Length: 203
Ligand SMILES: [Mg+2]
Image (cartoon, rainbow, N blue to C red; front, side, top):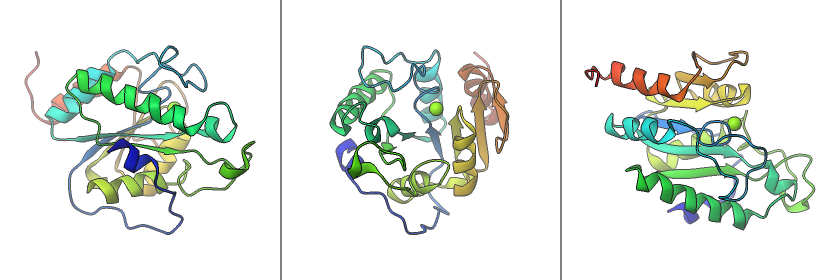
């Protein structure tokens, strides 16, 4: 499933956001799933963020589809080939699976306007803050975007989520909230909120 999602070319056409279907927890990668060490491209440098597996597992238990939405300008910059990103993504998905979470998709944008690699030099509708990746995820996975959650660590994540019609936009960290509707300091804060929203009793 990952390979079929990953090899699709970006779509520049306006897509209709999903108006029915399942809610999703959509995760930015660097700074959310893993510590942002800068252009992480190997599992040796891939350090999972504290609480990410518990959050994803809670989301699954609450009925959310879980997917990753990530800009990967490092591919365009020539820092690592797209095949290496895909291999790392398969490894990452395996780690989630080991914690009881089947990722529904890992959507990435390899394009960047100032790319060193000509094949990736373009202004893409998929690159956040544009909403293309989220809209494509909604179309492929049958997501209900208004009922979905986007979790990111950058203003561009919040802008992309807002443009895609996601009502719950969660920013982790102490940056300016921008289009965020909720700011959290730790992943556990969102895990707790998911439980509260579903009326689950505390542990
Ligand atoms: Mg990030």
